[in-house]
Length: 235
Image (tube, rainbow, N blue to C red):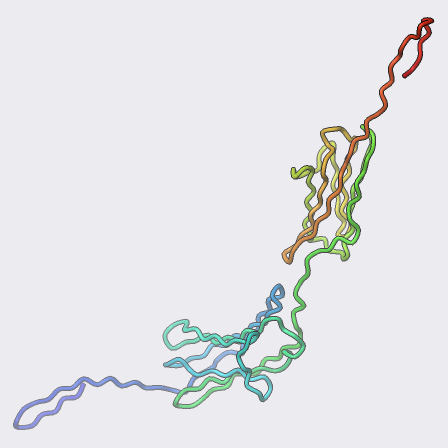
């Protein structure tokens, strides 16, 4: 507030004074890897009265925003900003040393460097290499269905169904999975257990499936008949 007086009177005025200082970067940038999306995020915190102009550098070249590279500036609280460089679908070209330059009218600040040495490979859905085969057999026989995956991964989720109904381990059905081979065994086949058998193998990246038919072969009926002379015969 400014106050001016003279013999003729008095004048008051309110003034707002904005003091801007050079941005301050206190921490080393943090690197977060998101494997599923083959994405790398580098984040740095910047202290500044007003939102700074931010440039991410890879070696001595400014990183340009495009379909794979984006810069996001978020105000966390008054005078503090989060500045992120997001790189999606990373390739070997994204390896290197990065740093942040934050600028305002009073000057600029540079972060310490961080080096990207590993590129996330992402993940793949499981693939069934050897699929189910349909089976026809007589009642009370044992039958085994199996599939083999192209790679070994014990975290793969295995689901067996019969006519769309989920199967579980019980006195009639045995399920097993060693990370590559999934088996479903029916100890004694009955008519109630026949139908369409399906196995679904899944992980966070996708799934694969295979189906087969379990058919019950009717056994031949045997009957005894008497001929005209009274002799018995099998038919």
